[in-house]
Image (cartoon, rainbow, N blue to C red; front, top):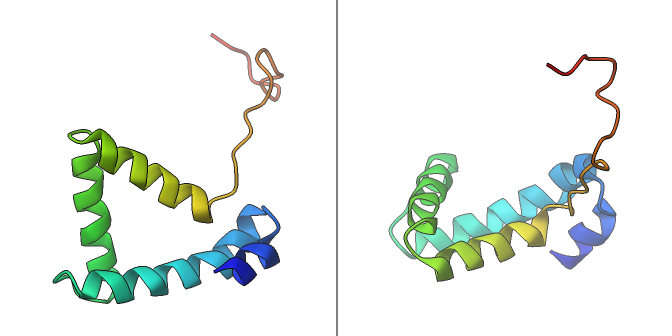
Length: 90
């Protein structure tokens, strides 16, 4: 996982190319032990279940956020009042 993260260099496209497949494979191996199928459908079911528990349990929400931070690059927001790209604000 560390090697994949190093190869991605905080670039979203590279994260999807290098890190996401590794993270997905690890997740598939783990969720299988808890009764989920180890295919894409099992991963989606697991993700939906975790998402539903995030609002009910702050610990689950915190752990989910930490997990996402492991394989998604940090997001930077444009400065407040930045240009709207030529689109008039209404």
